[in-house]
Picture 1: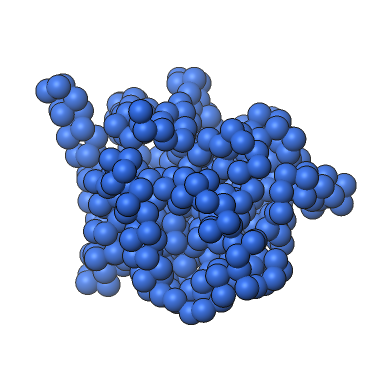
Picture 2: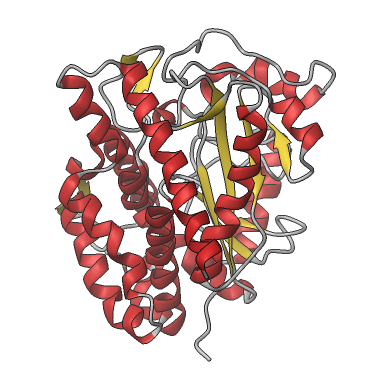
Length: 378
């Protein structure tokens, strides 16, 4: 049997009206459904899927909580909103979901609405801790590509921001400078140092594009968490992004000498970290149209070209694992643009933002209905 890694998703969502205005109900949803948790701002909430290896099962794990939430929201004339920022506002006001929660108070006082975003976190299970850090290095050096594929936050407070992922540019990276880690010991030492110096308030306070994860961080780790992606409401595209991520990590596991940037790059560790930050900012601004710098030697490369190269590199492994079809939505994005690009094209052609968001909401509902009808026919 062909083996995959365990995969799980942390899905952050906004709730609101069919016209795109945000309405916060996270505390009520968390009380109603045990698998939903409230975020500090009541306008968004989160659910976490059970770990699963097979792609044939992942789509239903993503959609089933969404269907339950949507049914509950429909009774209140509310819906699930696409996009990863407060597209129609109000980003000036923090709306606490729990006034008695000291962590929520800390978030409001220190970060305000810069953290009021929605996103997808993709977790890959890696039991061998010696393989987590080479994988982490590779994914961090290519994280900008995953952001470019997922970008869905070009609006804030009712206007275009001039970038494709406003979410990633406004989200407060913490700590501001994060190195590439040589190994587990290096990571543990660095985390303990940040905690001593007050640069992190706890071991979870590592808000970067990708991080190690586990039951007792930083000491017990069993997975890699990609945090950079904007909210992807198209489940087929999300699974394609996940497959590309998994194929890169499996390729590294088969030959760490070939793909670990720390061992292979002509750049220093400091230069690599700076390159990652620069690429992330470029991808947040222009996504697929961004000009990036390759981790191997710093050479200039277009975002689309780099993603196409990765697809070509992983194709033999995808064929071997029989998931080549799972990757196919990525080519559609390369050809026709991501969510932000499509939205901006419609907006620039005269479509109002409420109509644009309303159309996307209806597309989400149709996807859920189509999948449900297929399941009933099986």
